[in-house]
Amino acid sequence: MNNKIHTVIFDLDGTLSDSAVLSMEAFKRIAPEHGLPVPSIDKIRKATGFATPEFYYILFPDHGRDLVKNFGTLVEQEELLVLPSLGGKLLFEGCRDLLVKLKERGIRLCMASTGDREHVVSVLDITGVAKFFDTVFCARPDKNEMLREIIGGGDKSGCVMVGDMEKDYTAARANGIISVGACYGYCRKDFSEFDHYIYNALDLLEILKI
Image (tube, rainbow, N blue to C red):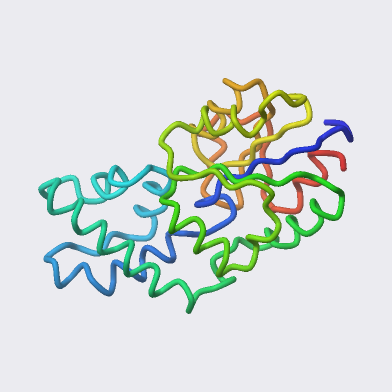
C-alpha cells in the first residue's frame, strides 16, 4: 500500500479486544446457577463476532432459545460489572501502541462492530482507547452498511478494514476497500480471505507503508 491511507476501520471483539476473556468471567459467575455449562474459552472465541442473541444460540444449541436469550441478557449485565477489573488487559498486545502511532500520523480511526452499543462503548472507555476513535458504529447486524456510511463519498483507495471474521473481509470487499486479518487475535488465515494478514498489531504500520 502507499502513503495515501487516510482511514483505518477496526472491528472490536477478536481484533482489538480479547472479549472472550470478559465473557468467560461472566459465564463462570452466573452459568451454574442457571443450569448451564460454562463454555470453553476456545468455543467462546469461535462464537465471538456473532451479534446477540446468535452468539448465545451458538454456545448453547441444546437449550431452549427463550432461556438462552434471557440468559444472554444477564451475561451482558454481568460483563459490565466484571469489565472494570480487567481494564486494559482486554486489549491484545500492541493494539494501544498501534492506535497511538496511527493517530500521530494523522490517520482517521473508525470502529465498526456488530456488538451491543453498551458493550462497545464500555470496552473502549475502560481500556482507555475511546479517545483515539473519530467515529464509532455498532449494534447493527449489517457491517456492509456501517462501512458504506464510514467511507461516505471519500476516496476508497485510502480506506482499510482490520478485522478477524468473514463479515469483516466481505464487507470490505463489498465496499471496494482493502482488508487486513488480525491473526494475533481471532483471525485464522487458513479459514479466511483477507487481502493481508498480520501476526503482531504493530505490523499493520508496515502493511500500510505509513
